[in-house]
Structure formats: structure tokens, C-alpha cells
Length: 443
Image (cartoon, rainbow, N blue to C red):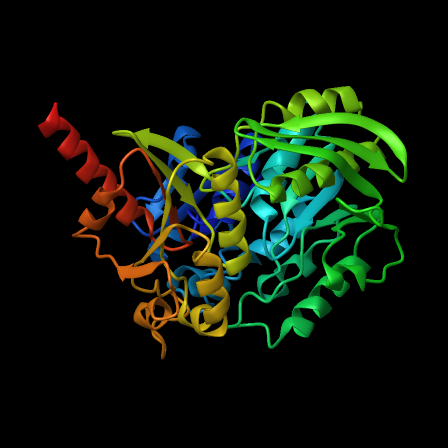
């Protein structure tokens, strides 16, 4: 790191970028950034830290800056282009992350699904025990003096995680996501194999994933799950409306009872991965038990609130596997309530590639509502629509507009889950405003 420079983030409101900016700020470095002027949920943390956020403008670029470019922006972006023309040092986000983790015991959390939740849980647990830097994909980042650990989300998109070489890697699963980049599931597996080759001390992988079972590495691979074939095994699992509890065995050795105030089977697996890392770093398991019990979750992952008798859950789920896990978690916490899902398909390529799987997962809800497809900056149009997905859904499938959320008023004292990785929250806000308005009229 260079104490004589100002780190300028192009796209500072991105989830990974804002987290990285917060870490540098905490370490005492000078930080600023630029982005769109529209408010985003990552913005609050930056403002509270006193980090300057500028509107995009090539005039932001001047001598004395080190530029960190968000991966959503090409080299033609005016600020990035000017920085390169001036000969300033420019890093891509993932390149800089590879530098930041050096000198700490680093743990990269990878996988098509579950990265953010697992990274958040691991960061919470280790932070309660030893100084820990962490970078979470929900925009949360923290740097501390003399950190022992560096916990970070290792994103496989465009093979960006290959810019890092962690001491440990957690691998939650291998699945076909990002069809705009990866050619096939074999291509995805190839990326994870390369990441495994770059890991220095050990890999912790979900035992039920057949493709993770095929990985080869020069370091030990430990599998976690519910089966006797897993190195770290959860037994005597109990899932209730207050969370989950289980007993952990490591190759038959008794590690004791653990509990988490979290819902869904996937959070048992996430907890096992965290326990496994802590075990090999010789962290006191009694401390781990205490820290697991106080985890409150991460942003936009099963975030709950109650309005006018309705439970509203906000979740980032945008892949069939994630949708299934989120509905499973809701069924555990609210076994006697009806569950409606409002889903915003994310990108045309993902929607068309996984159409049947989306319908199958969404049909696990009691009723499904859809919004129009969210078109990302890298994919503005496609040959598929939400109406095409609607035809495959048997549990409803009506298309909602942000101006008319009234079909959801048929639910009372039930659960509505808003899911998506785009701007689904504007539909959520519209529904909440409608509920609040009706509540005031009734009262």
C-alpha cells in the first residue's frame, strides 16, 4: 500500500468496491471515489466513514491518484481512459484485492451460491476472536490494525478470483451461472480447479457437490456436509422456528454441539465451513460456538421486517438454487404461513439458459409474481421475457408493475419474499408504501 497517494475508486458504490474502500480507509489510507448519483444501499457506509463520493467526471482524475477500476466499467470509461493516458497506476478491483490480502492468513470464500452469507458468517466469527480484515459482497468492509486474518469473497465471474492466492479456500458449490461468460459447466469447473491449484494451505468444500469432489490439489481438501463420507459432518440436526442446532464430528472426533439463529439447510453447511477453518487455525471452539449464536446475517440475504402484519423478506437470490434455499429457509421460520414470492429475473442470458429450473424452484412457493427482466449494463436486451417464464409457472406467475402492487393485498399475516439481484427493491418499496398507506387509513 502507498501512503503518499489517494486511492480513487471508479464505481465506488459497487458492493465489492465500497467494501474495499472502507478497508483502506480503516487502515489510514486516503480514499475517494466516483459513481452514478442515484442512491444505492452501499452508499450509507461510505458516507458514515466520511469518504468523498463524486459524480463520474474525467475531471476527477489528476496527479497523485492511484486508480482502482470497478469491473463493471470498460477501459473506455472517461475516468479510466484519462488515468491511463496520464500514466497513473490503474488496478482492476480483483488485481488490487490480490495485493491487499498479502501478509495475513487469507481465506477466500468461493462458489456459485452462498459466498456472501458464508463470508459474512466467517468474518463475524473470526472478528470476535482475533483481529480480522474482511471484504463482503454486500458492501461491508473493515480493516483493523495488525489483522491476523483476511476474509474475502472470491468471485468466479470472468475468473476474477484467480487474481488471488489465498491460504485457505472455502468452496460452497460449482454451478452454471454467468452464461454470458462461461461456455459450460465444465468451463466453470476448470476455473475452480485453477483456484484450487492456487490455494496454499487447505480447501474446505461442500461434500454433496459432485464437481467439487472431482477437484485435485496439492493441498488437503476437506469436505463438509451431513454424510459419513464428509470430513466435517453435522449430525443430530434440529431445525426450528428459532434457528438450527447440530453436533459436529471431524473424521469421527467429537467437536461438540453448535447452534445458529439462521434458517435453511444451506446455513448449516455454511456454519460447518466456518467451523472447519477455525479448527485448522486452532481457534478455541468454545469461542466459535458463542460467536455463531450472535450472527445477524448480511445485507440483502434473508433480511426481514414486519409491516402491517405482513412479514417482508428481501433476498439477493437470482439463481434457481438460491431461490430454492431462500424458500426453504422461509418455510423453516414460518411453517404455518402462506409464502408468496415476487421475483425479478436477472439478465436475459441467465433467464433463457435456466428457464425450466427457475420455474421448478419458484413453484416451491404458494404463489409467484414476476417483474420484467432486469437488464444489466452489460446486457440491455434479449430474446426472452418474463411472460415466457410465467407460462412455465404453475403457482401463479402474474406480472407486477411497480405502479400496481395491489395483487399482494390479498395476503394478510403472511410472508412475501422479494428476490432478485437488480432493482427489485423499488417494487418492495412500492408495496411497503401501499401497506403503510392502507394501515393509516384503517387506523
